[in-house]
Length: 164
Image (cartoon, rainbow, N blue to C red):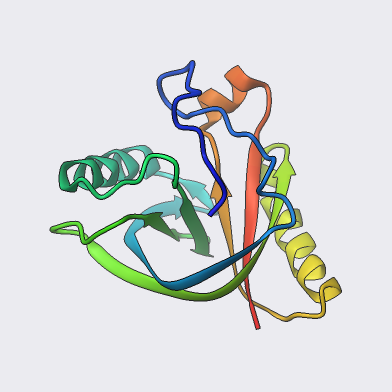
C-alpha cells in the first residue's frame, strides 16, 4: 500500500493526506486482513459513524493490530441506509468481524466535497474501463473527517476499484 505519514498530524485527529503515490496506482491484496464495521445512514448521510469508528479504532489499537505507515479504511455505501467499512489491520482483533480481501485494485484520488461521491463513482467506473478492465466493486477511502478537511482546506477521497 502507499505510504501514509501518521506523524504529519497537526489536528490530533486525522493526519494530513499527501496524494502523491496514491493517484492512478495499482494495489494487489493477497489475503489482506480487515476489520469490518457497519454504520447506519439516512439517504447516504452517516448517522453513527463517529461512534462506530471510535469504537473500532479503540479495539484495533488495544489489539496492537496497526502498522503505523500502512493505514486504509475502505467504505462501501451499500444502500441509502447503511455503509460497510473495512479497516486494514495486521492481525485478528478480538470481538470484531474479520474479513480478507483478495485481488487487484486501481486507485484514483479526488478532491472536493463529500456530496461528489456519486460523480466520483461514475468516474471510477469510466477510469477502470479506460484501462481495459471491468470494475467489480468500488470503495472509497475518505482520508479526513469533515472537521480536518476544513482545517487542511483540502478534502481528498481515494476511489479504489476492484478489477477483473
